[in-house]
Amino acid sequence: MSEKKAFLKQVTDPIKSKEAKKIVALELDQHLEAAVRNMLKSGLSREEAESQAVKRMGDPVKLGIKMGKLHRPKIDWSLLSLVLLLYLVGFLPLLITHHEFQFSLFKKSLDVLLGIVIVLTLMMFDYRKLMKTYWPMLSIAGIILVLFFHLGFSSRVVNGVQFAHFGTLLANSLIVIPLLFIGWAGFLHRYANRTLFISGVFFLSLVFYIPISPVTNVVVYVVMVVVMYLWSIRNQSKKLVASIIAALFTVVTGFLLVFWQNLYMRDRLMGFLFPEQYESTYGYFYLQFKKYLSEAGWFGQFSQMEKFDMAEMYTDMVFVTLTYSFGWVFAVVMVLFLAVVMVRMCWISRKTRDSFGQLLIVGAAALYTVPFVYNIGMVLGLVPIAGFSLPFISYGAVPIVINSIMIGLVLSVYRRKNLIVSIN
Image (cartoon, rainbow, N blue to C red; front, side, top):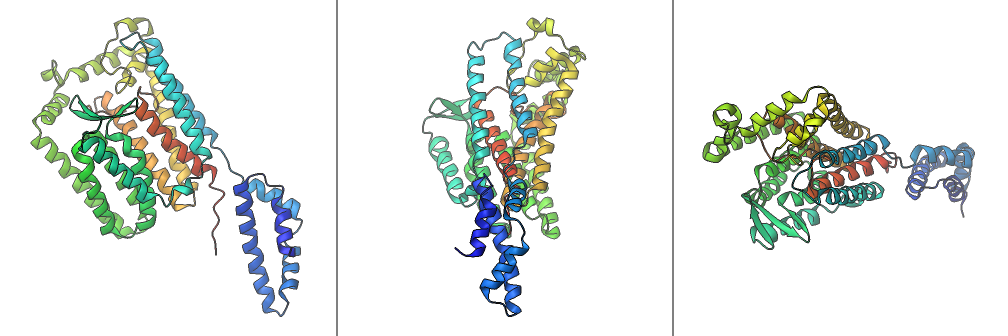
């Protein structure tokens, strides 16, 4: 064994993490090789150059302990704790109300347990193994959309929205979002500078996704891809500005076309703008929001919960349920916790050196922020009602699974942010 190899072995022996061992060995090997090349120029033999380079590195044991601390995988306990807390908050609506769901507390427990398992499993998983899976991910998502939704295999329509059975799970097209999320992160990492190619693949995906998806799913998907793409070209100022203008023009045009051609959507918009004039139809929910939220007070109406009766009280309207029960103090703290999750993801993206990891975090932040911000704005009467659930808190297996996948991958990126080294 050469002196250099023996030195690297002594350095890496105290390091427990296998990933950290590889990174430390690679990093030190690069330093040693650079030093050896310089010494070879002065006329030394390779053996002599390696010997001197190794001596200059110092005590291998002390260096190994230092490098191990620097490169060891880390857990973002702040983000993980916040997510677990929000999971627990999601149980409150089921504990304080007595409504039609007789099995919901048990099912909620299973959903949350599944979500926690997903988070912890993906946190330990090396996200970098997903970097080259973009074509399989996008292809599988397309196959699911065609088989289960376009061809109607094991599917049915519920309230005008197409759902498909995946075993015991009933889900709409939102089920493929995790595949699209991972696929687009890898795709943009590989083809960020090929604008026409990216645009072609994106619009082709919309051809498959829009006809069988509710508007909310389309919005989430479009925002996710656009935000990830803008992030990937953030250092190209001209292309960035042009892309932002094109995205805004497309979104505004699409919005106007939907509401102009769809009488149902126009009526819903009128109900949002003039709820008192549509109090028996499309304005009913807005008036309920206003009533319950105005009666909540700072500390809630927990003793009056038997009078509380509103559709979607466990799902899309869960914010109203919790605010009415525990008051605005609780509501503000809850929103702050939800906002901190968003801010924390943005902070992690800035601390991450790996571009693929950054894309995963940015995509996850977009997928999290759209439902969070819109749901709060919706119940406050700031935007029209749409089917956006409150992350981690609303009842439902599919949203929990999707949010858990996102957070698990974000934690995986954070855990390995010190394990990235440039290879020269």
